[in-house]
Image 1 (cartoon, rainbow, N blue to C red):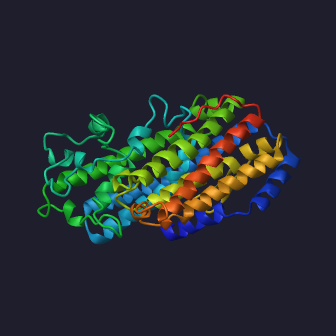
Image 2: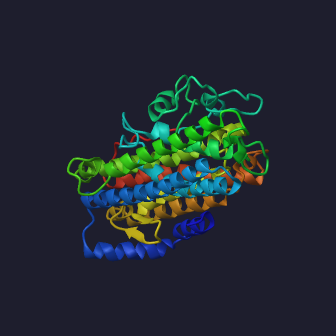
Image 3: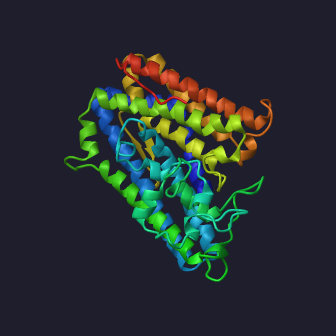
Length: 394
């Protein structure tokens, strides 16, 4: 699925009438009682579906990267970029499954090597004015998965050596344009055209393979029918699992998306603080994150094949105690998705100017909506008797 079609599909899902969705939920409630066990069980199915789609799209990117490094050219580079953008749409929605010590961000979780940012690109490869910078240009450094993991964030949080943004940097290069993304030439990967082109090809291949490995492990952690994996434990967790779900949504809403990913860049007006700065895909990152929150709240997820997974949700559970509050939260989350969709590309131009600049106002509107939604989610938790809700704060 190409990016414009995918973006349209995601937008359509986000713009679904809350009234229609509520009618569907009400019909389901009439058929079976809503319980914490049912909500946790459907959440596990939704997480597995989202990670499965992310893994499949990452494998498509892996295939495209292999084709590119085998024969660097403008068309093969363009295809690799396209598959990165498509895969990010799915991965961005999985961010709603974080912040509660699950498989992605427990003590052994791969989150830090999957999606860490901002990235000091000179740590990895040459940049403008520093042609010999980075691990690529250090022949003494052996490029392996193990070594890249060891180098990730070594000596500083911005020393990112792995993950989505390392791959993004290799595919686009530095963004030195005010109007578009980076414009790395495919000849950077051609022997005789650029120093250490062979190592650059090797690095891109290895870091992509590592990302697929990590996504494979996350998908297996949530796979059904496995006796002792994380999913099996989660579905037995009842109220504690529901608490984790709400921690994930509330933390992504305020601390991470509104705070780290939008507010920091808005305040600094610095391109280096935007999430996907090399590809200028930050505006889509924000939409995918907001949509991931909506997916979990409503208990529905639109899969890569166009089908929609639906089931018992947090909204259903809150509605059993306070239907008006459940509807209020639903509308607020929809408003956040809509606000994020209004942010325009390139994001690094949206953050520039005074507070009355249209781009800054669009971002601030999204921040305000996400902040309110985080408060509403806490109220929703309280309504179902969950008062121990510690959220990640900015």
